[in-house]
Amino acid sequence: MHKSYLLTPGPTPIPEAVAQAQARPIIHHRTPQFQKILKEAIEGLKYVFQTNNDVFILTSSGTGAMEAAVANLLSKGDTAITVEGGKFGERWTEICQAYGINCEVIKVEWGRAVEPERIKALLKNLGRKVKAVFTTLCETSTGVVNDIQAIGKIVKDTEAVLVVDAVSGLGAIPLLTDEWNCDVVVSGSQKGLMLPPGLGFITLSQKAWRLVQEAKSPRYYFDLNKAKKALAETDTPFTPAITLIIALVEVLRLIKEDGLENIFLRHKKMAEATRQAMKALGLELFASEAASDVVTAVKVPSGIDGEKLVKIMRDSYNVTIAGGQGELKGKIFRIAHMGYIEEFDIIVCISCLEKVLKQMGYRFELGQGVKAAQEVFLK
Ligand SMILES: Cc1ncc(COP(=O)(O)O)c(C=O)c1O
Image (cartoon, rainbow, N blue to C red):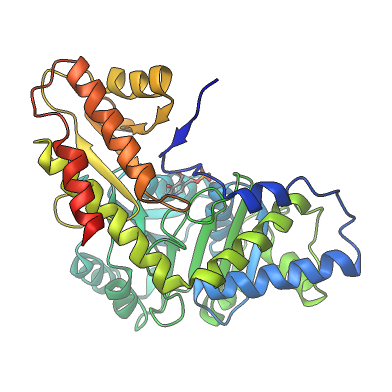
C-alpha cells in the first residue's frame, strides 16, 4: 500500500468532491438536465477566464484548443508571430506550420520571459500583414511567466489578434482576458482546473471572430462557428465529455467559493516556499527573473543524475515531480504547485527531494529546505 503525491505540471491532483462527481451516473447531453450543467460550466469558466465572452468547451487536451485557434483564425499563406521561449512556444510554431502559416519566430532564451518590446518592434517591422501573435502565459517547460498584460497593450493597437496559451496558469495566476486585451485564450482541464485531462477551452473576442469569418483553413471537428451556433442553443455540436463537464461544474463551485484572488495568493505562497527551499539547499532556480507561481524549475546540481533523481522520488517514494523536457532533459527538475496543492504537499515533496539528494551524494544539511519552506508558511 502506497500513498502517492503528484506535483507534476499536469495532470495535477483532483479534489475529492471533484473525483466523486465523476462517479455519478451518465446522463444524455441533449436534455434540459445537461443544458443546466453546461450553462453553469460556461458561466463559471467566464469567471475563471475573466471575460464577458463565451468560453467554448472542446473534447480534447489543451493542444486541441491550440490547434482550434490556428485553424479558425488563419488561412494558408497568412503571417503570424510566434514567441518561442520553450517547448510550448515551439508548439505554436509547429501547429502554424502544419497549416501553412508563415511564422515569424521570436526566439527567447529558455529560462527567460519575452521582452514585450521585441514583439512591438517586429509588429512595426512587418506591418499589417501580421494576423496573429501567439504567446504563452506560463511556459511550463521552463517555469517562466510572460508579461501578457504588457503584450496585450502592444497588440491591441494593431491589426493582429493576441492569442494566449494559458493551458498552464489559468486559475492559478492572474490572467485578465478582457482587461488585458487577449483576443483568444486557450486552456486545458488537467492543470489549474484540477480535473483529469480531456477538456480544452477557448474564448474569442469580437476582433478574433472577425478573423474566424475570413479564415479558410480546413476544419471540421474544431470549427468554432459550429460551436458558436450550438452554444446559442445551450448545446454542443458533438457529444461532449459529459462526465468531465459535470466534474468541471464542481471545480468551478470550489473556485468560486475560494475566490480567484485567494487562489492566486495560495499559489504565490506555495511557489515562494518552494523557491526558498531550493535556495536553502544550495540549488539554483532555472528561471531567475520571471519565475512563475505555477511551476518551479530547478537546475540539477553537478554530479547528480537528474533523470535518476526524478525516477527514485517517483518509484521508491511515490512523490512524482517532473524532469526537464526537450533540450532541458536531465538538466532541470520541475516541482509544480498548481491547483489542489497545499502547504504539506510542498513539505512532503521537499523532504523527499532532500532524502533522495542525500542518498545520491549531494552535500547539504538535511532539513534546510523544509525549514525554509516552513518559515515562508509561518509568515
Ligand atoms: C503551456 C502549455 N501549453 C500547452 C500544453 C499542451 O497541453 P496538452 O498536453 O493538454 O495537450 C501544455 C501541457 O503541458 C502546457 O503546459
